[in-house]
Length: 287
Image (cartoon, rainbow, N blue to C red; front, side, top):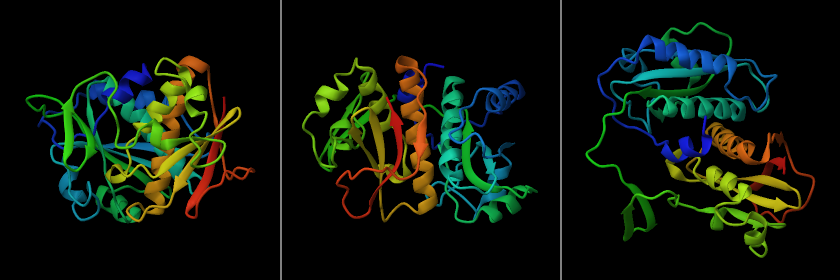
């Protein structure tokens, strides 16, 4: 898979065609999950379950996109063993699966839920594992013209289509050198858009997050990239951990294409990075 291309093509879909996803495609999704899908923590047991569009009515009241259910979609659930970093691992896995669905020309949308047991009951899932991810997927109902929105501020929105488009926060607002807030030297370290590190960080900046809050950033520390989590009043702990897993997948997948395989080490970083209150170093990746 060309991860860089799929990350740029990927977008959340709110409307789906009333078209059944072919059984052959569902089988390919299952096969990809079992044999190729990346894992952040391989020791954590997980399971993929697929459900048809008739599950929409069952899920009402238990899940949705910002409390609203998505129509005419199939759904997938990722179940996980109870373990440290299970949410980050599930986010990593689910985003890899979503990018493969993008490659298969399927649209996707992450859904939110507060009670995993209610989701299991609604879908008739019998398992001791926890529901960590719920997402909708299917054939997108195409708009007349697709535009990328480059939001400068509330009164300046440019509707443009181009190879690289700016997320709400770009690299210049997410990446620091040595200490949080220090921009000196960042450009020299990451180079321009042809540099492998720039491309990996750009892919990470495009990671979807709840309400596009992007509650994360990076500190470059010598030969390591350190992922920083920011407390956010709109994002609960589980959603934030899922977000971080998505960010780590985007970075690692694109970095592997040009720099070779890169893995994240989870846990606190043993160096003072000058982080403000409410900010935490949660993972690091050696370059």
